[in-house]
Length: 308
Image (tube, rainbow, N blue to C red; front, side, top):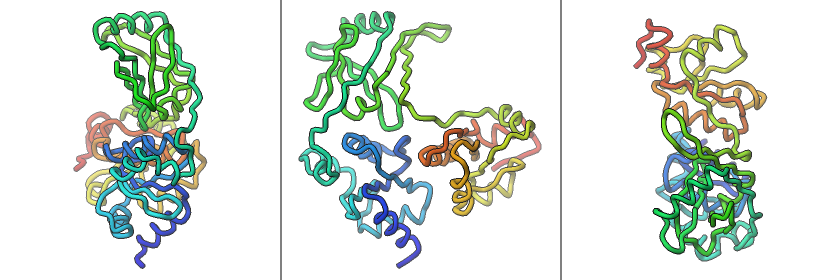
């Protein structure tokens, strides 16, 4: 058995519910992965996810391990369940709840949701012109804690509540995240809009401007500056004090206290964002992603660099 196959076997045996996916539970990076996360969130609060985008050997290895060509892949109690379509079918039939050892119609506590007077007035006005008969205000919180509000017809699985005289509906995964949700309506130079505050929302990866990173480095703050680029890119240009993220360094970082400051960067900020989300999912709470990556650093801090 190859090294990657052995690693996969160990993960499958260790975690009762394991999802190989693109992205993390908090930040899925494909629609199929997001769909499976949304389904699992209905039944289990704690399960393990593995971001295959962070490890090419695992990404290819899981396909051979399960003899299944696509990702995501769900394992329950060491047994391969299937991909997105199979998980959806099992959810619809009630079989998934049985596999997970969860009640098929698990009760969810009704969340406390609050609208400000301005928000309630704006929503009532919108209902007059945008809501069809029988529709209610749907609030959605997806696996990456992105919010949606729109008028929709209720489904049998929805939780229904009344807030400031407005009928509100939400699915069970949203209801689990929504207790204490507060919605206001604000106006400013850039226009009007709803402002949502949620005390349940976990820490987020924070955007960090190049100038702000320079201030942190000049002040000699205790932080790990992490480069997720390739060897070729690093050879062309790098930020002094940074280290390449490889398997050994990742293990070293994950042994640090969870409140240690981590700053990630790549060429433009996309790859490093995904890496930062992975560490956020591992429990770290002070994580930044360099906005614009080393390109922004070269343009605004160190013009001597010529990154690729």
